[in-house]
Amino acid sequence: MSIMRRLAGAPISWGVCEVPGWGIELSPDRVLGEMRQLGLSATELGSDGYLPTDPAELKDLCQQYDLMMIGGFVPVVIHERSQEQATIDATHRAAKLLSAAGGTIFVSSPVTDWNWGPRRELDSSDWQHSAKMLAVIDDILGEYGMTQAMHPHLRTIVETREDILNVLEHSDVGWTFDMGHMQIGGMDPMEFLDVAFDRIKHVHLKDVVMDKAMPVLRHEQSIMEGVQAGMFCNLGRGDVPIGAIVTELEARGYDQWYVLEQDAAITSDEPEVGAGPILDVLSSIEFLESVEAFASTDEGIHT
Image 1 (tube, one colour):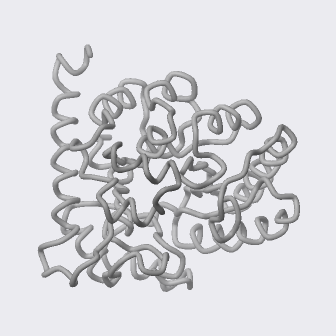
Image 2 (cartoon, one colour):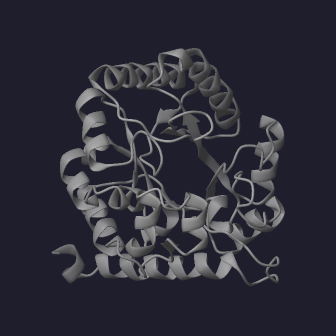
C-alpha cells in the first residue's frame, strides 16, 4: 500500500495540546474536517479530553468524518515503583477508550512524572523496573488487541541516544519511530533504523530546526516555547533527512502507519477557514508525495 494511503493526522499538527497557554485550540469539527479535506484517512486521538472520552461518541465522530481512529499518545510513569498501579490504571483507561473506537496503536510515553517534571538520571535498577513495566503494559494491551509503540520524547526518561540504547538493551518493547525527537536527543534516525528496524511499530513524521531545538534540550526553554519559536517545521524544511528516512523505511518493508505530527501552536487570532495549520499540513503532504514519487523511480529504488 502506498505511503499516502498510510498517512494519518494528529490534532497537535493543528495546535491542539492540553498544556495551558499553548495557544488557541481549534474545534474538533474543524480539525477533523480539514484532515479529511486534505485526504487523510485516519487520526490519532490527540490530547486528553480533546475528542470525546465516551467510546461510542468518539467512534461516531470519527465515522462522521470518515476517519479511522488508529490510537493515541499516552503518558506513563514506568521507572518509579510507587507509580506502578497508577500506570496500570492509566493504561487500562486509555486502552479501553482507544480500542473501543477502533484504535490498535498505544503510543506510550515514559514521562518523568505525571506533571512532566524535570529529568533525573536513572540507574540500572531503574531501567530494569522500566523494562518490567513496559512488559506489564504489553500484557494489558494484549487484552484489548492493541500494540505498544513506545515514544522517545523531549523531557521524558527516553530523550537521549543513551536513553534509547538503554531501553533497547533492557526491553523488547515496540517503538514509535519519531525521527525528530530522536535527532534532537542525539540519536541519528538512520542509526536507529540499522539497530532496531524490526522494533518499529509506528512512525511519527517530524522535521526539526535544530538551532531552535537546542535551547529546549538544554532546558533553557520549555517545549511550548520551542514550538512557538518554530522548533518543528514543515516536512522537508528542517534538518532531519525525512526523504532519505522514509525511502529507507519503505525499502526495508515498513508497511504500517505514518502520522504527520508537526507540533504547532496558534498564538494569535484563530485563522480564517482555509488558512493556518491546514496550509502547513498541506505543504508536508506535498513533500511526502514528492518523496513517494522519487522512491518509485529506478533512481529511488537503487538509492
